Amino acid sequence: IDETSIRLLSTGKKGIEKFDYIGLEPGLIKGSTIVKEAEVAEKIKLLVKKVNVGSKKITLGFSGLHSLTRPISLPVLPKAMLPEAIAREARRVLPVPLDQLYLSWKVLSANKGKTQAFVAATQRKTADSLVKTVRNAGLDPHRMMIKPLALSRMIKAKEGILIDVQPSEFDIVIFIDGIPQPVRTVSMPTETLTWEQKTTMIANDLERTINFFNTNNPENPLKEKVPVFVSGDFLQRKELHEQLSGESGHPVKPLPVD
Image (cartoon, rainbow, N blue to C red; front, side, top):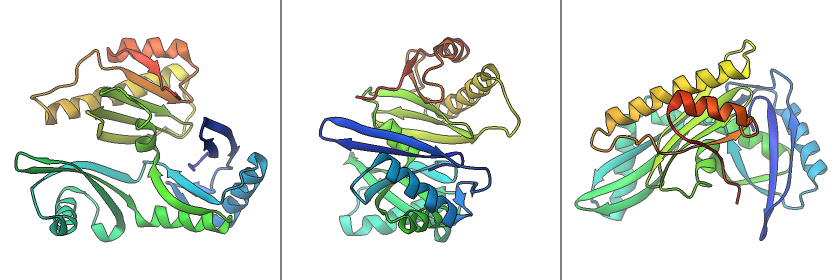
């Protein structure tokens, strides 16, 4: 769910079975928070009926616009002490008070005296409005995922960059050894831009994101041969892939959907 549309994907043992979407009028969702819950719930019901999905249990994907992610490092600690230690470190590194966030985390490794973990947080107001609306539509959101993180899991390469472009925003994710770092979601300007202008804007933000990563990882800067995987509205515009590749210096490929 984002500000412009609701998309529904149904999968089975053989992969993708059904996909469809329904557009949203301006004003139903603002800043990733649903402001007209009853109207959005009706839209969800229409889409579920249209796709004819039998299950009520869903994974709910939502915009990364007001979400935060960080890899963090801690000393090796007993398992029982990890939740408090991670919460304390998240409180230190995240720019938003923890009482305004839902926090989740996963330990990635624990060796050489260090515990490496990945923290994801989203604003409570945003998450609560999404869950309430989906439940009002008769669905059970048993899992929630930040969209750019969900998309990055589709990439099997050890290193890469994901760019997902939607009408109102785009995501940039750099991942190394399968770990997203950093994850950025950027709002599109409200004025109408040509696709060439959008591509230049995306390339500029990509350069800033890469520079941020290289500054924080001087011992292991991102190599130019690392591919950029594109998805969303950008996927079929192959003539712009060359423009983005030329402006960024990285090869550009479609996001695999296997």
